[in-house]
Structure formats: structure tokens, C-alpha cells
Length: 163
Image (cartoon, rainbow, N blue to C red; front, side, top):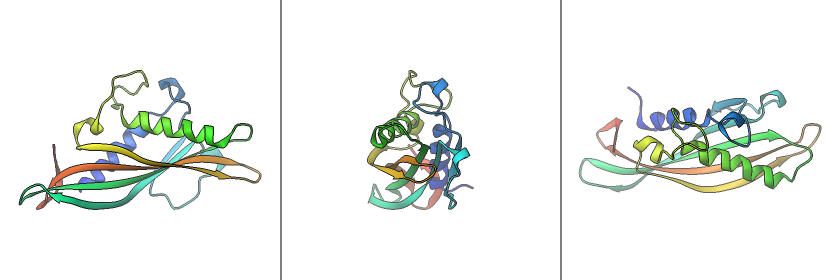
């Protein structure tokens, strides 16, 4: 039995894995982690770390069903030296946004949009994107993206999404 939040995060991770230049994205993802506490090393980048930020009740739909929102924080980092870091952050954000709207069976940027994580959730909204920059011997930049995912669940069954 897998809680619905974990099921949603699994789909998010599978879609993010499709970020490659061969699929039409700006970057080729080297490493992806869920809820990693260790900083990425240079050889790991471009790299994504993602995790659930929170899960909130929006409203009861009826006595048994609830509408809930899970917030997912996605951090995408890459090394850089020569380009404007906000331009790179915008590309990283675009890669995330496109990947989350493409099915794993049709991952190309040019493929048909697959809304709502394959229709397992009610809504997918890209709430914020914050550019990140680091300096030193190995400067990096990134995009920190907050995605809000609305889903429906039986309040007595935390293992089954309702579509």
C-alpha cells in the first residue's frame, strides 16, 4: 500500500527523468534524487532534487471525499560560467514545466501534452520559480520551482486517488 502523496511524487520523478537534449529539452539531466539532504557534486549536474513541501486540505467534496493540495518543491541545478544565470534558470524551469506535462511514453518536447500527470490528479499549477546562484571554483545556478498539485482522495482511504 502506497500513500497517495508518494504515488504523486513517483509520477513527478518519472516525468522529470525524461529531461534530455535528445528529447528536445535545454539540458540533459544527470542525476535525480527525492528528498536528498546532501549537496550535489559537480559531476552530478545538471541535477534535480525534489520533495513534498506540504499537503493541505482544500475542502471536503462530500462526507467521504476530500480535495487536497500537495506542494512539491523541485530544485534543478547546473554548472555555469559564461551565461547570465537568470537565463539559465528560465531554461531549467522550462524543462521542468514541459517534462511534467509529457507522459513517460511520449517524453519529447514536441509530443502531445499529458495534463494532470496523466489525469491522476485534478490540477497541476506552477506557482513560483526562484533563480538560485552559487559562486566559487565551481559556480552553479538553478531554478527552485514550487508546484501545487490538487488531487481528490477518499478521506478514509489514503492509498487511492479519485479521478
